[in-house]
Length: 279
Ligand code: C2E
Ligand code: CA
Ligand code: CA
Ligand code: CA
Image (cartoon, rainbow, N blue to C red; front, side):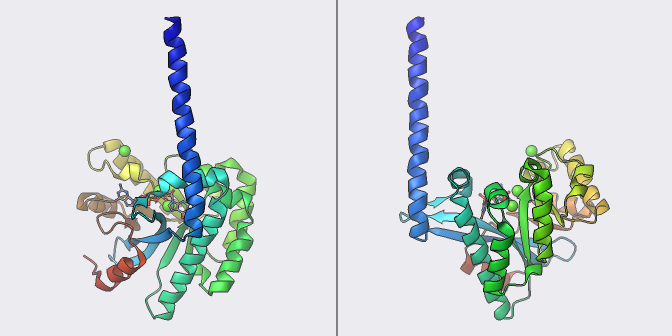
């Protein structure tokens, strides 16, 4: 039995070593990916529920490797966070989005809001106000068309500091969203402390509509709460017409999800914009 215990430990540490090696490998590849320009910004359409019009798009990062593999952000963002690489990557995303947004405006396309995810490192440990101010100036993208998405956990980490940074960002004239709402611990009272414009309902609540009565209740409550606070509310992860109908019946403002479109590379998103007709 003693031996078994030792063997267990041995296997356990071998597993750890392998996991650590894989992470290191991914970190090295990610550094190379940046140099080789293998990172891409995809856009997922956001639709106004009442009118059916395209009103925005969320920018989502993809890593297209030289072998044609597409690596999901959930695999490399955590590593980028830990290594600090997320700061240059995040600034690059912001710059790409603002440049692209400016190009679309220059071509005379109707303005839509472009939403960008901000990581905790970027938000709390880099001078994000100055970085965004510079990017807006350099690209000439109007701040009122830019929306920044932050998660509850980022805001709760350093509450006081977070409020100050949010105020600074607001002064630039851009919109602020709370992402993955409902998965953390924020209460109504708490939410009021932060200068936020948009609530995004986490897709974990949407996915089980209409099978889980609890999730429908929570979704309806979040929508009502957003209205009370005069915030816009967006549901994410909408995949079925039934889910959309439920959201419409509860007066949810906007949605995004596979029902309309997956996140698309720029050329395909442009085609989507040309072809899209409200249903
Ligand atoms: P998120 O911000 O919550 O983004 C929404 C995720 O839901 C995206 O996953 C999107 O592709 C996915 N999604 C959209 N509609 C549906 C649907 O109908 N069904 C399902 N099952 N999924 C849907 P994605 O693109 O894999 O991104 C994962 C996460 O990676 C994002 O979650 C975000 O936290 C992070 N991320 C992506 N791009 C960036 C970035 O530029 N910067 C930072 N800091 N994080 C990013
Ligand atoms: Ca998001
Ligand atoms: Ca989310
Ligand atoms: Ca669920």
